[in-house]
Image (cartoon, rainbow, N blue to C red; front, side, top):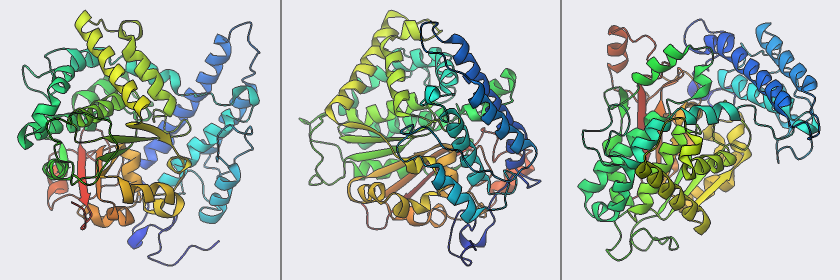
Length: 496
């Protein structure tokens, strides 16, 4: 099928005539991703299937890993040998509602009929990779629904126990250089959240800290760690923090927007779960389009908890992936095991918890369960999040989501690198392109926020001279190292 003319964006025809990134490119991070990272990720999926088969209860029905391993090995071979994208085989019925191999296979024929993992767009090829992994696992009835990445996700969160303990229950630092000596614990913070939120300065101070925590929580991306040594992973974490490394920083605008669009409630309201009303001057709903589970999800929960405890937000919708995706992306089931971990921290985490820290972790999870049970928090998923479509197409491909955002949401927070790539069409926009320009139709939403640590090439919104300064100071990998970040914001002209 021929691609539309210049200016009509499709997966193989980015907007404004800018080229997409691809694994064949000699520059940037796409090529090492295809050559080095993807084979490791597929191998890890094979190992997860084999480990699960070996660990199976002897009384349970046996699960033969052979057919799944064969499909995953074939996938790895096709990547290494630069073979054309081959059709996705059939999956077990009801393995996932609306997951259709025919849908993916038609997309390949329409947009990249002769392409390989190296020559298709990086975004399309990477999404197709995870669709192939999912299809391989779900090709056999006994393996349907198995998450090949679950063990890695839970293990990474176990390793975060010391940070979780300090944040929830001690007068300690929030994370790395975010906090100051004597920083309040999260429980102390939310205990006084309503009173502090009554003044713009108090509300903004703590909102800034939690935005930074949510931002740098995004550094815990397991797909980025494929092929890295433990020393390299720790170095990446140690260098990812604070505001100095935010190369496009709209935090002041975000703070001002939240203060005006989500006004402080009257003194007798508090953190209520009452129905949302626009009569008091604000839409009291926030949407998170989530990225990683584990510590990043924990940091997102802290941000949402604070906003609810101030009384400024009454509903939060968390948009999860419906299938295992990009190694560590959040599924609805990841919420459940994370909250269970907080309910029993001494049993789950490797780090010790004091009695106070344990009580605070349990109090946090009890509040979260309360939000969910009351309907104040909604945990949802949709097939759109596990497709190849850039977010420019949400209004066409998922009009139910886009329509809700336009009518009900006061702010949509897009977390992480994949969401950023989809916001800016994963193409070679000049780095100084305004964020509003690059995100297309998404800019029509009342407010769009991107919290993203840089782990791939696409980037927009930089001031003149920023990229040149980074390169001149030796940061040649600033676009993908995970050491730098962007916090970008776009407000619709007709919003508050």
